[in-house]
Picture 1 (cartoon, rainbow, N blue to C red):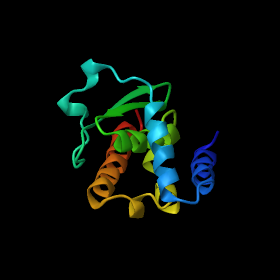
Picture 2: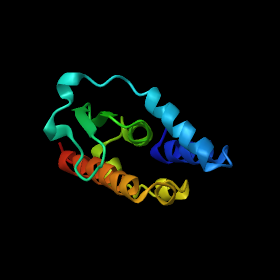
Picture 3: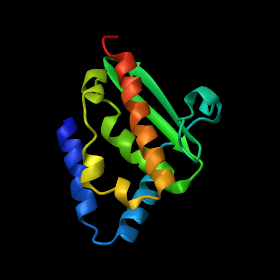
Picture 4: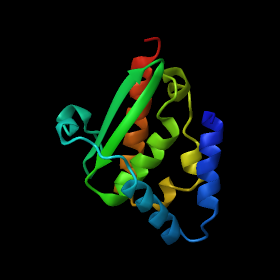
Length: 138
């Protein structure tokens, strides 16, 4: 699946729900299905700065692609990071670094989060982009 197809799939998934309460429940279910994150990787250097809750992001570059894993101590935040890594994990650094992440606004996520969670979302996106930029050309 291309990056554009993955982003469109998220937009389509969110379009199935009329109410934001249902969309929140969907986000929570994404978090519950996130692969377990090893306790030994829950280190300060993997914490995403700017998030009210604790969010850990790890990235492994392999075969020209970035593979993200993540966890959070807050269920909604865990769902949000799960959503992001489901789209960007397995992509090249160049593809991720060059993306505008506009699908997040298209689904209305930022505007339907509390200000602190919206700031956390921005920090998650910035960290994923920075990680990708740091790996361009490697």
